[in-house]
Image (tube, rainbow, N blue to C red; front, side):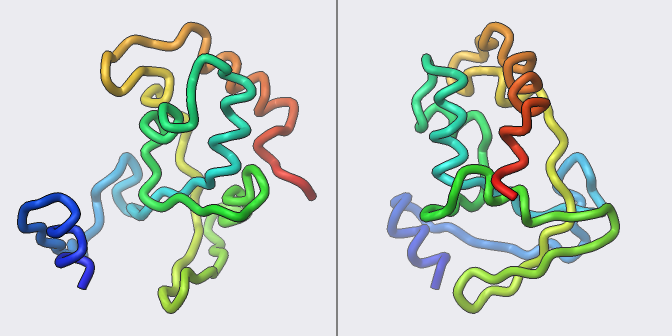
Length: 136
């Protein structure tokens, strides 16, 4: 069903294959999807006013983007190392278990490769202030 939808959307045949071994990301034994929320990306544009929400989406490259949540709600999808948070999207059951490490990718424009001046420092400063913790 999703293959047909994606094939129609992109205009060419799309195949989805499952890799039961994982090993896709920089934490190969804990490979999974990355999630973000529209409200988090919008909140980030307050700290980076030159960047639109569309540019933030390209920079952070989440596999799934939630809407209708408060900013940084997705940070509640993980807990202590080794523990899991169960959640579902419609009938799909998922587990949250690990935040993605901060990396250099969002600092760069995905189309030009140009680095946003001080992106990482601004991000870290806001994170230390607690903007990524979300409301308690």
